[in-house]
Amino acid sequence: MADQETVPTPRVVQVALNTADMAGSLRLYAEALGFANGGASALWGGMMGIAQLDESARTLMWWMVGRQEYLQLELYAISRPEQQPLFADWRPSDHGWVRFGVAVSDFDRTMTVLAGSGIDTFTEPVTRDGLRRAAFRDPYAGIVVEVLEDGDALPGGVREHHFDADPAIVYVTSSVADLESAREFYAQTLALDPEPLEVLHDHSDEALWGLAGATREGFVVRAGGGVLIEVVAYSEPAGRPKPADHRLCDQGLAHVCFGSPTRASAMDLIERFQAAGLECTMLAGDENAVATYFTDPGREFEVLGAPSELLPRIGFVPSHPFIPQEYGRLGAPL
Image (cartoon, rainbow, N blue to C red; front, side, top):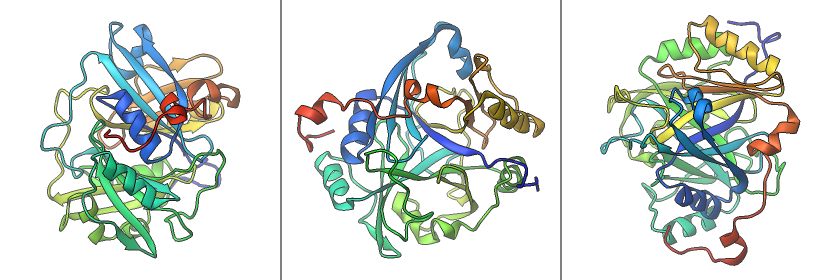
């Protein structure tokens, strides 16, 4: 294993979703889960090369922030080329990033807003270590979101309130075809120690996202930023690969981003990926910042190097509230 005394722990700074309905997603994550508006921007032209798209491509991207420092949801709504949906019978055992978990302090309120908005959880809430959990399928990005009641027994502990927003991103899950290869990548390339799945979920929890009785193996690693990464390989139901024509802009949980405060530290991580035989997309940025994607199956990551003064411009700090949150009401159908 790489020497963890000399290799910095990669810090998770972003969970990126491709949504079929930007306004729907913003409302869902703001009203039901309590994420704050982090602002928006757009990409077009040559910058779209980072997503392996040509200069005719264009997208709107929006950021949302919870309580944690240097951690965001990033939402993409790509209008050209047209986004392809997840296949109709998609399951959270299929390959790729499939699920993430969010802790909230008022679990009852979140369940009430979801129910009043026409979004059902797969099961009734269950209790683990005295705290409740339930999961629903995001109707816009198509993936599974687990809602966890906040408390001392939360996996990884209670996350600090750096911002005046309620939710905390607890974990994100990758479903892979080759578990041992993934274990080697996380242990050797990223220098993260694999731990048992039971750190986060036991076998009965598969029912929470519609896979009761599933057969799977996996492990959990503790990445920087207080986010757990869960890696699973399903044999029943067997995980299926993404379609051959899948693109980075298609619906779903697109990637997880590792972030660093300097361009140099990000380049060090990029070089670690490359030494493991992975190829990156276009390097975007300047002398102070850099971003790129890695797209191999089971290795869908962004690496970002951005100095602290850039973070408010790219959505890591809460902005003004959404107008309906200031003047509207909660609970109308989403």
